[in-house]
Image: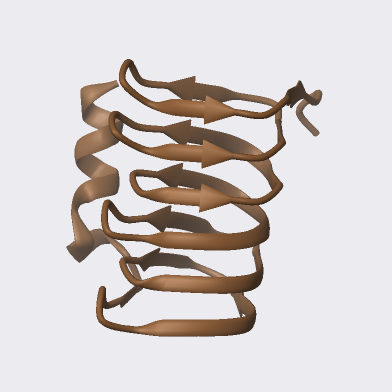
Amino acid sequence: MTDIKEQVEDENKLETVISDDIELKGRLVFKNSLKIKGSFEGRIESDGHLVLGQEAEISADIVSKKVSVFGSVRGKIKAAQRIELYHNSKTYGDLITPDIIIEGGALFNGTCIMSEEK
């Protein structure tokens, strides 16, 4: 799992990074990879990889291929491939995914439905 975490934390391997001093509201749609370090409220839709950084404060329903959480998120997360909840992350909401990783020290309050892979 360390290899996965190191790959996700390397911002050079991600298409776009939203800085920690940015606050956004609304509907966010993207195709490749995105890391949010700031705050976002609304809905996020993607065919790519969403990374929520340690500083992230997210209140949104999320639909994506893959979601990696290092910060705080409130809302339903549906991932076609995998959801990753890392140490010190806080997730409040329901998860739907065929594969999940929950690292020790991660906080998760909600339900989890393990859907079959397509």
